[in-house]
Length: 250
Image (cartoon, rainbow, N blue to C red; front, top):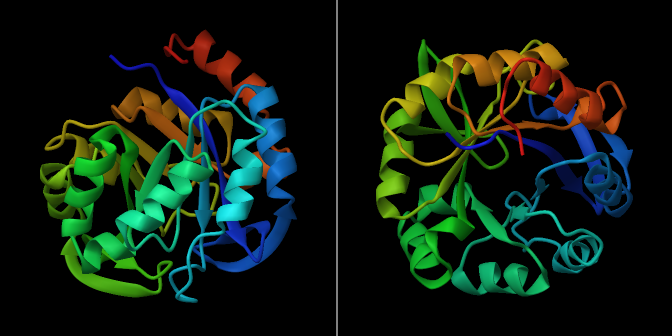
């Protein structure tokens, strides 16, 4: 079984780290370069950088900021937001990203996943899924969670894996920022019919939420933002608690 990963997330807007609740009411959470350095020092296993308004503003991800962060850290670094082409992805890889996360662009052009997987390798391609329940059915959202699609979440995850995605980053929009625990239900549904690593995102509010996630699902990563940004939970204490619960971590 793959060892579990603790992954801080930097949601970026206008060059700053921000965090909201249910994808809205964003507030400043600090300088992304300083946070990245801190998280590596604290023992984070990976780092995710999401330029959350790049798609809405119809611009490319902040390559220069990615370059700054990548030059300061050595842990695996995933970057997403505004990636619409192989050229966009290659620019970020050249800037220091280890993996590329796509969401809205993959929904509008699923062939992009195959292109990225063929050129960069499946291990570099992360499919980010923003999802929440609509009439008791998990659906995929795009454009920073603003737009619902006809896609059913589990079926979409199956399709993107067939197309070449090597990892899934699943964010529960209804749990995001609520600090009431991960939405383990949708992770369990996805893992029953997929065979790639899954990172669970949205809802982490305590150390116990990570223990529950890893004890009740096969998710290989737990991603969080505000509890790390605002020093509510330390990565060091979180990893020690996981060890104490016999959860194998990196």
